[in-house]
Length: 114
Length: 115
Image (tube, rainbow over all chains, first blue to last red; front, side, top):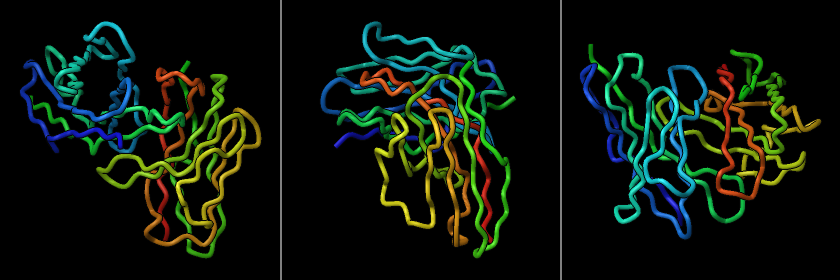
């Protein structure tokens, strides 16, 4: 069975510092991995995805993610955090059974402190 | 443009009411989704339509009835809901390719409260 894990419920970081939000995955076959961000009472906004190729994926709002096959990880990073980055972040993997389903992680709340 | 719109933004209904949620996209996407999300939890998939046909029903109670009148529109008809159905209902769409790169784009959601 496929799954993604986000081991941290909450991550706190000071404004201007680098941030990392962790995600590990378990899939059979090629992993298709996604990051989404959700602000309070809003829908999910697509940040970036890994399909194949370069292990460092660049996305929206200065975010990037590093795919590591040996560690089965897809951590989200940003070199310098902003207070406005405070939100709920979800990692997801595309189900490989031929459906259009995503499997979401439990989410990580990022709090950037001024 | 990656916009998915949802109406209404907020909905309060009694347990005997009938109401509908509406979702629209004009990106030419051929897959559309309904999710239910409780506070601080990940979205839970309810239904998937691909090419206007229902392809996935995640054992959702019959008081939720989806409808896809055309490739741009998705409705969710609600009847005799329970208070535990109160949640944020999210619509999403994607191109419906068989490739892993098929990306879902979400609407802003409808906040539903059942009294």
